[in-house]
Image (cartoon, rainbow, N blue to C red; front, side, top):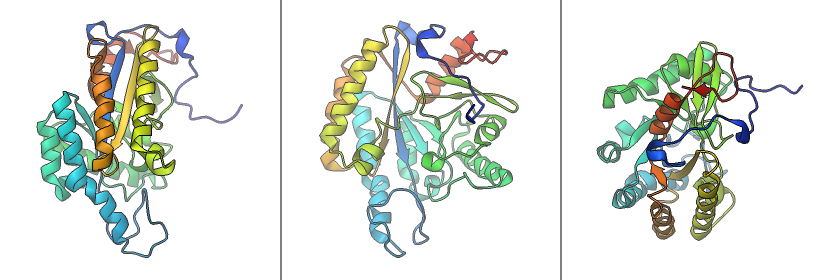
Length: 303
């Protein structure tokens, strides 16, 4: 047998316990907005429109900084206009770098998900103690600024280590967004308990579609609408989660906002059938409906 992560068993979606979202709805929809900050002049990590340029790579740093200065504000205004809550994947360095944007997102009711300190550092490859300290630092920063323990985690660069889930559960987290493997939440085993894996999109995500595959904004919108229409049909059989990932410096560009507006307006028309919510609310509701099974069955058991 090939080695695996040993945190969950295989489970086909047709064979799971049934459950519903609030008001009997079957499709939960959330928007994950990545609000990130990168180190200047040190190489950093993450996306690059200008790879190979010697440091300081001002062009690349400034491209991403546009999201904090302009793009994030535009996406926030659009989602407020449409009544769509945001799940903010936050590099906690943004509390110091662009506090006005973070506060505006919080004031609008956004959920803050810990996205590490900066996308300039990746936890995979650190020692366990170094990673524990990174998680602790990001967690304490959110608690200091919000007074709340963050419920969710997304690793910088979507690149967790072999012990990330153990450390997250031990640090008080309810869920992770690091595993894009399902359309329903999945209970994962950790060395001290359980952690939820929440559906996170690596397809309906502006990084692969726009930056890596050079897709246009209308193509992104067409893909996301097709995904929504089909998932709405599928959700008549099983309750599902549709997540959409946006980065402030990508979809926050003016020429892409028009397509994003049309896309979100299309989805919002089905307010009667769709639960517009945050990742944390999805995780909490699921945990109340489907408890982790002590016998380690793949998806848990009805609560």
